[in-house]
Each structure stands twice: as structure tokens, then as C-alpha cells.
Image (cartoon, rainbow, N blue to C red; front, side, top):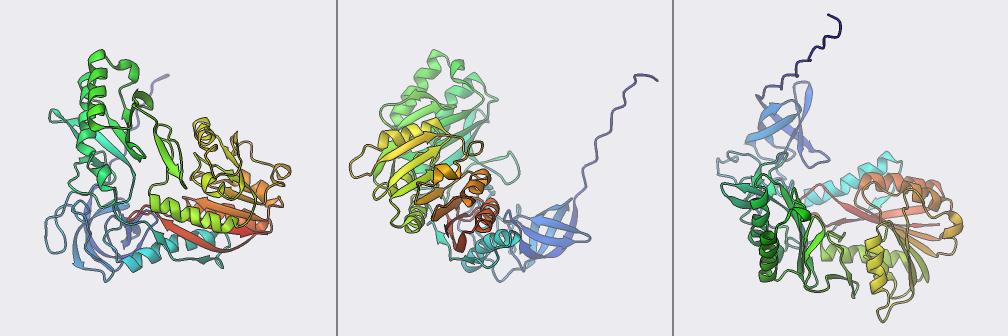
Length: 443
């Protein structure tokens, strides 16, 4: 019949089935991999060498038991980390996994080698297999100074926690071995902050970002309620709760609600304003490790460009001994550097708001610098390193949170005549599949 439209039937979801298989490796996301029939399946919380009992659905599997434990398996430190939902190899009761950690169950030596291997694989794909990958510089447990808590209205109250792996199911947390204890202790207070908002919209979803600033906790309530939705009662309740918690700041979707004083973070001894949800390295010791690599690489250079500078993670460390030109696309981050640059003991700092993805510094603009540092987002700095590759800058230091895009950018620089001898991994996100890298390129 002309004009008649037929609805396509939705594809049927594959049915789960039971299988037993050996875990052969750990994939890029930290899941174990196994071959079941003609397919490769991904198994959270599995270790290479496990003989695993699985519930398989498509290319994903749940570990339901172990016939044999791997020699590189160890007991996890947290009750919320589990390799099976209903029980472990000895039928012990496991905690409900929060999804934040993927690799607590691996022996330290194996875990470190696996993370080094992520970098080696990325370099090898770009023809850089000769580059040495140095031992990890790892953050200690309970050092993370930023967290994104999920908050939902469940059972007539605000419930806070993290999400289970691969789902929107909230897992209330009794312990955490990643977060700074001060940060973890705030979770119930953060849930209470959301209660006035749930009275306006009980179906709202919130992801509350908490950062430990110099003056205390900085909290942003990010979610389905906007600042203009607040009535007088909600505003008063939020202000009183924030004051009682002695917060350094409270924002709602980055809009200030309570700011009793300046909110700062300190980079290499220089306090600078922290924008709401502003970027900050995950741990202080990780930040310091990256700063050391950058400073060693820059050496005695007297005029340095800091590209993708953020609010000055490396700017202020370098400005103790060099003139620094900081470039960043986020105006609030440059404004923070402008506030801090007049501190005593710093050499001149100049700044520029500029989108280096669309408008990279060109070779003519780079020729006055003796060294350049770049620390881009996960997408990397392809447009900028193409210009750096054609420049005469003697030393370049690259920092990245993505081995894949770092290796791509490194290949561009080496093709342009730069030498890369070694890469330094920095593990701020312990027990996760994430790893940061820093490296020095020389003409």
C-alpha cells in the first residue's frame, strides 16, 4: 500500500550461556579476555591464568566462579571490589563492586608491567618500539583529591556512592582506598546537600564533584536542577548546609551559591584561583612527579612556552627559573595564572587565550623559545605538534593522559627530526586502566 510504513522489529538481545575458559590476557580497559568458541569475550575482575566459570552474553562475560586461580592474582584491598557478583573462588561473600577500580586483584609486579605494556604497544604501533619505557612513578593509595559522586533519591532519602561497572546502579560506599580520607568522609554531607534539590525534583540525577582546595572542600552539584529553579527555601537550606560543612565553595552546575572567601590551589608554592570544576591533577604526588619530569627536561632554558597550560600546573614551577609564556583556550584558567603571576620569586609570566587545536603556534612564533611544554587533553595535540615538528625549538616536553594520542604526536615529532629516548609513566589513577606519560624530545 502506497505510503505505508513498516516498523522494523528490534533485534533480540543475545541470551546468556554458561562456559568455562582460561583468561589469556588483560585488555586495554582492564578486563580479562578469553576465547569462548569462535568469539573473544571480555571479563571484568579476571586475571591472566585464571580458569574461569563464565556467564557469557555476546562479547561480554561475568565471572561466576574460578576453577583455578592465576598465579598473578592477589586479594583486593577493598570490600567493594569483586571479581564475581555472588561469590569468589572459595564462595566467600564479595562486596558490591563500585566500578571505580578494575585491577586491584593483580599482583603489583604484573600490574606495573601491564601498564608499561600499554605504553609500549602504543609506541610500537607508531614505529617507536625502540623507545625505553621507564618504571612507573605511582601515587600512593588514598591520595586522590577529586571525586565525582553519584547521588540519587532512593527510598525517600538521598543516597550517594559510585556506579557499578557498566551500569547506572548506585553502590553506597563503606570504604575507598583511592580517595583522600578527608574527601571520602564528606560523602554523607554531600548527599545532604542534594536533599533540598530533590524536594524540587525527586527524579533528578546528580554527579557531585568534590575537590580538596587549599581552604577546604569545593563542591559542585551537577545535575538536573538549575540555579534559576531554586526557591528561597532551597537557597537558604543550601547556604546553611554549606556553612555548617565549612565548604570553601558551593556551586550548582558551576553557578556560585556559597563562596565565603577565595578558593585557591597551590602550584609549586604559588596559590592561584580554582575555577568551579577547574582542572587539577588527580593527586598531589602525581602532580609533583610530572613537574619534576618537566623541570628536568626544560633544564636551563630561560624562555619557555607552556602550551595547554591549564591554570598553571607547570607554569609556576618553571617560572621560578625561566620566563614563561602560558597558552590555554579556557579564559578562566588564564585568569587564574594572571592572578598568581605577580607573586614574589617568579620570573615574568605572559599569557594568551588561544585555541591551539584550531590556531596552533606557528614556527615563526615558536622561534624565540628555548623549550616548549605541551600537556593537551586526551585528544592530543596533533595540530600543534605538526608545527613544533617544523620548528627549531631545541627541547620539547610532552605530557599526556593518553598513550595512544601521545604516541601519535611523538611519531610526528620524531619524523620532524626530534629524538625520543625514553618515556616516563606516571600512575595517578591506581588500579585503573589509565596511565599518564611524560617525555623529553631533543633536536
